[in-house]
Amino acid sequence: MCGQEGDTIFALSSGPPPAGIAVIRVSGPQAGIALQALARRLPAPRTASLALLKDPRGDAPLDRALLLWLPGPDTVTGEDMAELHCHGGRAVVAAVEEALGAMAGLRRAEAGEFTRRAFAHGRMDLNAVEGLSDLLAAETQGQRRAALLMAEGHFSRRIDGWRRTLLDLSAMAEAALDFSDEDDVPDAAIEQRIGDGIAALAYDVAAILAAPSAERLRDGVRVVLAGPPNAGKSTLLNALVGREAAIVSDIAGTTRDRIEVPAAIGGTAFLFTDTAGLRDETGDAIEAIGIDRARAALDAADIILWLGDAADLPRADAILIAAQSDRADAVRDGLSLSARTGEGMDVLIDALRTRAAALLPGEGDYALHARQRQRVGQLHDHLQAASASTDLLIIAEDLRLARGAIDALTGQASTEDMLDRLFSGFCIGK
Image (tube, rainbow, N blue to C red; front, side, top):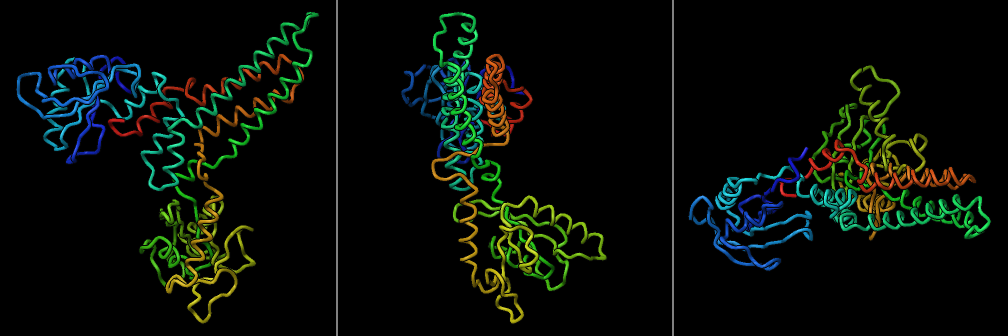
């Protein structure tokens, strides 16, 4: 749980020193007082100004820095803010932070507290916050693009459109109920208009519900290598990730548990999983556990690379691999390749990228988290229920419940525990 909202907080918002520049942010009702205490003056709003910072406890100089004074509410946090663009040495940052911490009413920010204040003051909704969290953690260009769209509010604007439509539909439903016993019904076709509006909105919501998963984008497309013992799975895994991640041996059963290795290929995140060799009989209890875990990995896989007989394909969409093509006794069914010589590896990588592209958001698309998908699903359920009813009272109630689902989606009806978990994952200074 963050500290008191009325506190004035400060933190280093740029990367850790040493660096060329260090940006220290201050947010809260005392931000202007703190800036004036350090610079001996308050700069013109939103105009960069150079000043010699001095310790308020005396006249000891701290650093010559660029200052920004940003009066609220039109700021990132919705509060008065100040930014100190100092030299990025460790001693400089430590001295300025120590001076700030000695001021009455100021304290160091907790993880995610700047962003939480932006959320509390309506500068961001929960979806934009989650997008920012993904943007900070992005490691591939695909992750960056999708996270930026969410952080910039593209999904939030879509939701705002849904809310406006719901309010219009609810107003029509209430009007139809109010005038149902009157002779001067404002529009005889109002029930048809309500039904058409609900159906159109449900269609749009269903399209978003079919959007790719943010977890898949963030954690990587799950590629499971499976097949009988000594099929070449570990060698292929090492070739795909570009390092010796798995032990390679001619001894059957060397891989006894799942080995998960993340890797980025062509800007796409993958999570490759090497599994224990599958066979029906084993006298080794540990190997049997590994085989069970291998089967569980197959159930959760986005893509399966099957290094076994075509007749034993675990799933119809599995990619059949004829591995070890450099050996005279190699199986010839499927995509012929050799992880040792590199033969066929480019074809396999192209196939993986093509499959992944169908599972991930395309250019200009965003991805939904499990929380968002749950709330959008609830919204869709309420719209479906409203669409299926002919009773205006039930329709009006389902529309009210749909508005509640939107409030939960944007964070207006979120629990403190959920918010605490979300913001605690941010770094200090965000």
